[in-house]
Structure formats: structure tokens, C-alpha cells
Amino acid sequence: MSPANYPESLRQRLNRMYIPDITEPYHIKIHWMRAVIPKEETVFISKDSHIHTFFELHIMTEGFFEYRFPDGKTLTLSKDNALLIPPKESHTISSFLDSSNKITISFSPDKDSPLYRALKKFGIDTLHVNEKIYSIINSIFEECEINTTVSPYVIRNKIFEVLIEFARIASLPGAIPRSDAIIEDRRVTAAKLYIRNNSNRLITLNEIATHCGVSAKQMDRIFLSCQGCHLSEYIKYARLSEAEKLLLETRMPIKEISEKLGFSNVYNFTSFFKKRAGITPAAYRNTDIVKEK
Image (cartoon, rainbow, N blue to C red):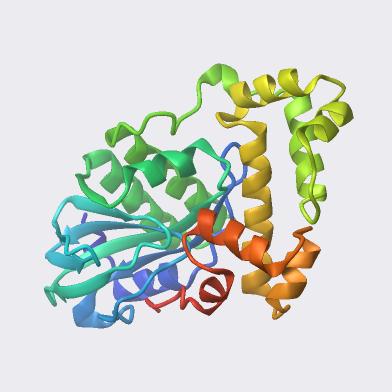
């Protein structure tokens, strides 16, 4: 059964449902999963140019949506295809068929995760979806119809299945860790906790290595083997994540945020943030991240 054939009341229930975050091994925040059906006005569809701070995965089950991007690129999302739009990529919905049906999953993996890096490299593109993805989506609606206290958690796990299946059919290198890398070295766990607990100041590789009882070179090698990125990059991701959180969840002045995170001045903080996020802290704070409501 196509997701579009489920009763409107059931689709609306899914649209409004709070879905818990995914934890190990990826740490993914699920913003929403929605059934978007223009003729029923299930979700407001903006034709204004906008960006989001999260990934959007659109799966078209009927009709089409046409997307336009600032570089002049136009992509038509047609039936049985999916479109991935990464964070901070400006886009416009230029046209769509009123009888269209699409499923949208909005999510944010941790920036230090292999899934985040693989999806960013994939960029903006369409991909043919397989029957397995449709089967998982149908099971999500069936669980939504059951509607028990554990349903949001079951749906969360099924959304994770959809994302991993997308990574598989897209052949994203590094998105799915090797089985021998899933069991995390205790020193990596200790390093990550130390970084997160001290993300409000400058910390060095030597400091973290001393805390974990190994040399800086060995710590970086262990970290790279388990996490797929160098320790220095993880520190930068942690500081960026903390900055994004403070910008979105508080009204703290940007100068105070830069001081809290251990930057010598606002200029250095702005330069660091723009280099890694693609926009300035002020622009990030003012971004309307929820256009489709």
C-alpha cells in the first residue's frame, strides 16, 4: 500500500508525532517525519528560497516536485525517487503537482559521525528508492496506527533503517562503520567526554592524551581508527556544535558566546564559525529553519 492511501487522520498523527533521537552508534536528532500532500494541505509548502540547518530526505511516492538551486541547477523529484538536501543549501520549490505525495524526513546526525560526512559528500542529488524503503515506510504507518507508548521509539528505529538503506543504495563510502569499529575503545570514549565537557575553552591534543594516559600521536591514531576522523577535527566539531546550540537555543549575545567558547575575540569566533558552517553566527541565528510546517 502506498503511504498516500493511509487515512488522512493517520498521516496527520505521524506529522505531529514527537520522535525520540537516535543514539548509538550515530546520534541522530529526528526533527520530523511528514507526509506532504498538497491537495490536502497536510503541510504548508513555501515557494520562497530558504535553507535549513539539517538534512532533508524527500521520498516521492506520487507526482513530482521541482527544486531550484542558486547555481541554476534544477532537479525534478519524480515518483519512486528520493532527494537529499544537505544543511545550509539554499533551495526553492519552483513547482509541484497538486496530486503529489511525498514523505519527508528531517534529521541531524552528529557532525563527527561517519554518516554526516558521507551525506555531506553526497551533496544534492536524486536516487531511485527500492521496495525495502517503501516496506519500512509502510511499517512506520502501521506502527503509527497501533499508537502505543512505545510507538515513537519503534518508529525512530525504522527511520534509522530508512537512512541506512539510503546510504547503502547510494553506495556512500564510510557511512556504515566496519563491524570491528563499533565497539569503541575506552580511551576514545574518555576523550570524547573530556572534549564535550570542556568545549567552552581551548583544549590541546596533549591535554586530552594526558587525560587518557597515552601519547598525543597514539591518541590520534586510536581516535582515527574508531571515529574515522582526526582528534583535532572532532574538537572543532564539538566547538561548532556548542556554538550552534547557544545561537539557536539562547539569546546570548554573540560576543558572550565567543568568550564562553574560549575565543580571544568575536572576529576569530566569526571566522571559525563561517569557515565550518558556511554562514556567519548572526546569519545562522536568524535562519528560518522551519519553513515547511
